Amino acid sequence: MNNIRLTKMSPIDFKEYYEDKLVRFAMVLEENVHEVGEMGENRAKNQLASLLPDGVLTKDHHFYNILLNDNVIGYLWIKLDIQKQSAFLYEIYIFEEYRSNGYGKKVMSIVERMLIQQSIIYFKLHVFGSNTRAIELYHNIGFKTFGINMVKEFK
Image (cartoon, rainbow, N blue to C red; front, side, top):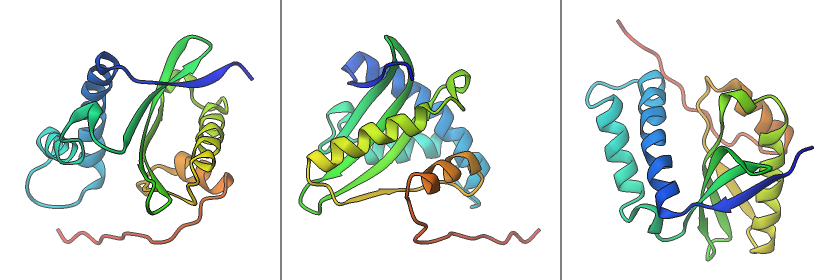
């Protein structure tokens, strides 16, 4: 497989990532959050601001560009809790044109090695039920389902 690697985002990279993430996150929330009230871009802005009060410098949050050779093909966002020996995957995002080539699986393998080197025992994530490709990837690399959120809509 081609050379896949991770590089820490610079503040300039993070600004570009954040703007892209905001648009994508707003769309995902519109599709998957079934509540009356604030939606879309405002909800995405508020949630991201809450999670990342100091942006790229937010304590314990780590942001990477995913590179194929020297081209950015996606992003990775992880939070580490060294004291609890736990990590949370906020996002692995592979650009559409690079999907279905095994790059996500390769990135997850790299991340797992990084986490093991830091004595992390638990690697957690959340995935929306509609994201069947991601669910399949996570199951294939050993993640187990620990809960399922369900909704019933009354109209």
